[in-house]
Length: 307
Image (cartoon, rainbow, N blue to C red; front, side, top):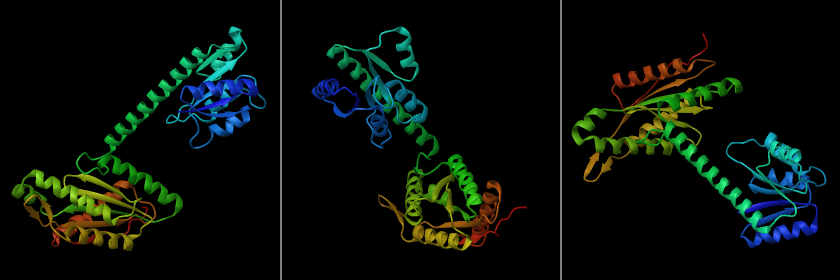
């Protein structure tokens, strides 16, 4: 684990750095608060810092206050230990109120420093585990469990975000609504496990066609939505046709079972300023037109504009 050590006293800095290295830490030592601040702003900055109270430029307390005020990110916490010769209760309280997690009064016992730095390391490890758990829960809450793409609620939220961006930047936006043809027959004939394989493979083929920043979501059952930022109606139709061709290019296999799959698609372009509901409804109506007129085809809705 990397540790930032900031102390303007060369002898003290060398001594503490030697202790930390002996205990297995990778030490980055500086001689002023200004240098420490520059290090902490780096992308891969040490997350644990041992800071002398009295230093040129920013002192330890000012540095703690600056870190808490200007670097409050929940995903990256800094554990700050103050080293000080100050012993009054008021001064120690002031240091803790400024944002220090812990403090040690000089001269200190090396074993105490070892324990306190170890506590900081343990707290940072627990924080990283918490952040990872929260990210996993957030991912699960926004993803379809079977296919791994966005679920309906998350896809609609992304559409709202992309529509707002398109308005601000005066750029086009299109939506595809797609439905696997005769999916109920696939389930009835081959069973739901094969149906699940068809859904997952269909998503894989869709993702193989769209751009990395396009949004793919499962809208429900065998229906999918694709959000195409910076794509007008003509581009969206071409993308939909490539998806349709990719899905039907060769059968989906599951063991000894081979299933031919096609899909129908409806395309709606945002125009100047439609609502999310209007855009989805237009793409849905175009999808139903594709279904009514023979399936395995792409139909388009009229370009939507503000009322």
